[in-house]
Figure 1: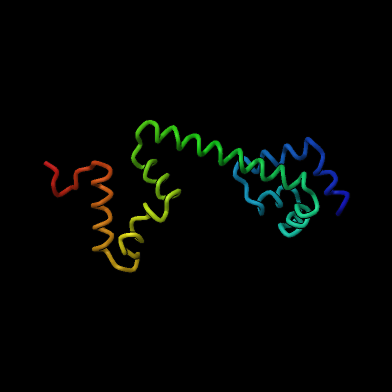
Figure 2 (figure 1 turned 60 degrees about the vertical axis):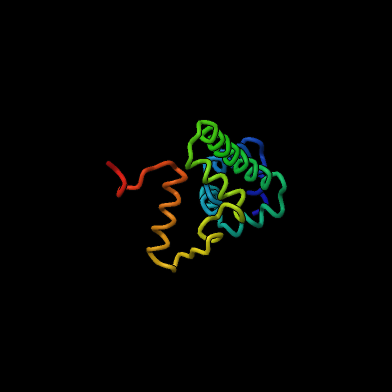
Length: 131
């Protein structure tokens, strides 16, 4: 198996791994594409910094691309993107259901109240008030 690892450490093969990772492939999918098990891939990643770096770099590129797209939406004033960003990055402040004491199991009334809050934040008129 060691000789197969050496093959995957070649620059052209590391580029393939970066591409798969950047394209959103999971570790399991990457292992399948390599013709090995997920366990073997994790073992190889512990043994080879080059392999690990290639896969991580692909993921970083993908995340950076998504962050760039999100920031563009925020700059355009997309309220959904703004809410997503705040809820993702300031969970203790902007995670409304938990900060308001609303839990999923509390029922539909709380869900309706949360939807009303979201309507106000998104400057939407609730259906009942529509002309």
